[in-house]
Structure formats: structure tokens, C-alpha cells
Length: 199
Ligand SMILES: Cc1cc2nc3c(=O)[nH]c(=O)nc-3n(C[C@H](O)[C@H](O)[C@H](O)COP(=O)(O)O)c2cc1C
Image (cartoon, rainbow, N blue to C red; front, side, top):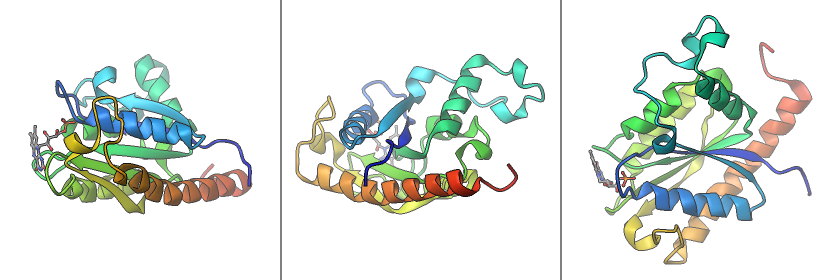
């Protein structure tokens, strides 16, 4: 069934020099585009947000909020769903990712689904961080779909341009996207048909 493309925000939340995360983001961006989706890439390194001092929703007068925060907040609100890429720092979510997500109110994300992509040069593929990220995403209202796309040994699975070096990359991404797309379509239809509570 043909329908208008889904809009996804793709979050990347590591900022280290030579980070592996950028390979994963490039791969996912290409994969989403090939699937016909609109992709808005939000990279913590490029955005260079300050450590959280005042999130967007703490400004009593919205006209006093920094224009960058307002712009990002609007783009997050416009999305139909989110793909969130996480590395694993001490079995947890990289601080730059939490910093990025924490700058915006839950109302911007809610009633839309998210999909988690996790990675690590080690054998567990960042899964421990992914499980923690699942709780965070639930709290801000974009509950994550059950499939988690984990990329162990990412340095051997994707080249620097995000080109897959084995067959598992495409099939893993497809499994996640099959679920995510279904939920994103269903939730968009329901938002359009019935609105959302309190609006
Ligand atoms: C502070 C820190 C903590 C880390 N902790 C873990 C860990 O708990 N588990 C793991 O698999 N890798 C861990 N690593 C290795 C990262 O998975 C690896 O450096 C990865 O490339 C990080 O993503 P990035 O390159 O996008 O920053 C850690 C790396 C850093 C910098």
C-alpha cells in the first residue's frame, strides 16, 4: 500500500574523535533513505549542545529559548518515529546521547515509536546500553519496538563510510525497520484519525 514517506529523526550520541558511531549512523541513514523514508540526522557532535543546564521545556517564555533548541524541538515534534543509535560506555548510555535527548520535553516524542541500534567493537554489541536506553525512551514517550539491532565488532562489520562488510547488517536493519515502520504507520494513522490525549 503506497503512503507518504515516514519521517524519522536519527539520533547519534557519541562525540569522540574517530568514533565508531558515525559508521553506524551513515549505514542507518542510507538504509532508511533506500527504504523511502525522510531522515533528519541529529548528531550530538555536530550540534555541540552544552551540558544540560536548561532544557527547552524549562523556558517559561518560549521566545527566550535558544533558536537552535526551538528548531530541534520542532523537528523532533514533526517526526513520525525515531531511530536512536547508542554506543556503550561502562555498560550504560553515552552521556552525550542522554544530554541530547534530555534537552526536549516528552511531549515532543510521545505517541510515536522508536527503534534502538546499538554497537560496540566487543562481542555484546552495546546491548547493555540498549536496555537502559529502552527505559529512557519509554519515559519520554516514544516506546521502543521489541527488536533491537545490535552490531557487535562494528569495526569489522562496517567500513568508515558505513558500507556493510557482511550480510548481517542489511538483514538486521531490515528486521528492526519492519517493526518500526509498522508501528510508525499505525501510530501516525491513529494520531491523524483521533488526535492525541490533551490536544
Ligand atoms: C568511557 C568508555 C567506556 C566504555 N565502556 C564500554 C562498555 O561498557 N562495553 C563495551 O562493549 N565497550 C565499552 N567501551 C568501548 C566502546 O564500545 C568503543 O570505544 C566504541 O567505539 C564507542 O563508541 P564511539 O566510538 O562511537 O564513541 C567504552 C568506551 C569508552 C570511551
